[in-house]
Image 1 (tube, each protein chain N blue to C red):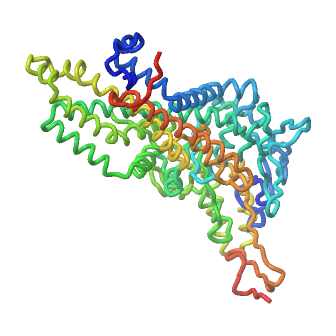
Image 2: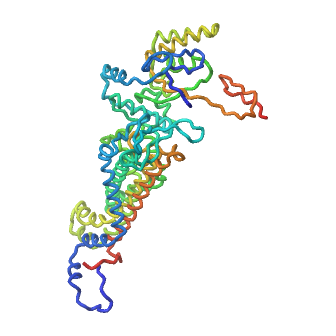
Image 3: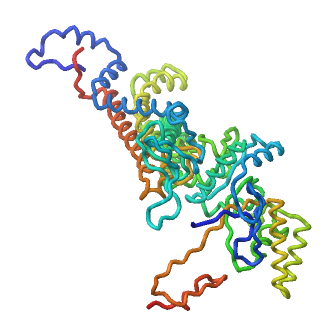
Length: 349
Length: 217
């Protein structure tokens, strides 16, 4: 809604406002979002990180010239014109063993240093981002689709359907999320999933996507169900039912569009949650399997190097913080933009 | 150094140990260098290049790192290797059970008592292999009748002639390595740090440092 000046409350609407009155709800929401600077900044951060991660193969092949999935224990690189080993003799403590090279701050060679296998941390960070973002996005999509189906069915059909689905959600909800995820991962990690038509290889990224997507269904399905229960009592739905419109048409044409905004608000928020969950599972070695990288596995790789090469663990940790923060700010902005009661100030066009 | 490359089943200084390194650049008594050219040639001859290989490691840092390093080497040799890190409490039983069709598993073995049979017979004897069981210490399922007969003879001889039995175990060690059912990686070194004030440090092959016999000034 545009603001009007208090001095002339009965003045005819300005052309700009008249033009705004003709906008649909999506256009209005987009305008609100564009006016929200913090949400826009967050969106830019998210897009920047995604773009960098998508460029991981190009960075590894043409800039860093490294294979981030291959051990390089006896390799050498050039730093400030000198050839130095990637794994240096340790000078810490008793001076035993080897320490990977630290950050060179040269994008062409081990920008963030090497990990315990002599691999380029910067290249692995970008590749890890691809895995983490893919798993978070896919798990979010899976979760929202399942939650929408469950929430719509439970809320609209009621009765036994609602009872059964709600109890199923209650059972899932009763488990601490991480405990459930860890239990499922440990059971499925050795043999994968083979349930009827669903077959997932143990080493596939589809496995953590499947697990993370399932465990958060109650968190989205319950609000959807509540919204559907309210919509079911609305006049246009009652009219459609009274006219004998088939249930599937009412669900698809009348109810689903009205819960779509709720689902959209959940997208960035669930992505942030799923990213943290994936990182936690991968840190515990039950998410992404080596040598594939994710931000969680890289943190685990850096655990033993915290005192000598902290950047190995810090870099992915900072990346996770940045992404989760940006997604949460974006989620708040999207929620405010889609809320028709939002008081967000709009700049006149 | 905290460890040394291993070329055979028995560790250095162990009863029955006789230095021998078959799989190195210059075969002899000591490990010299990797021979990737020869390894690639053998892979080509075997016709298994390009095969998918899964390495089962434990989920703690050392085992995972070994797994990732092995994966890197296998990829360099022309395989498509991956690593699966299982929780410590299930990995060992998982790799023992033939139902799981383990291809490469990372494990470790320490003496229960200082006798060559505790390594060779337990790890490569026919009687140690139990298909479809979580308790089958003979991980590769190795059963060579000739070597097994020699092991049984060495076990019998050890009762009356320990030195003679150890000589037999040295031959068995070499014979097993010629068949290469397993790949010894390294022998970690056992290190005891003591202060200058500690006296009467006594080391026993079974119990290691006998602390009760030492004193502190």
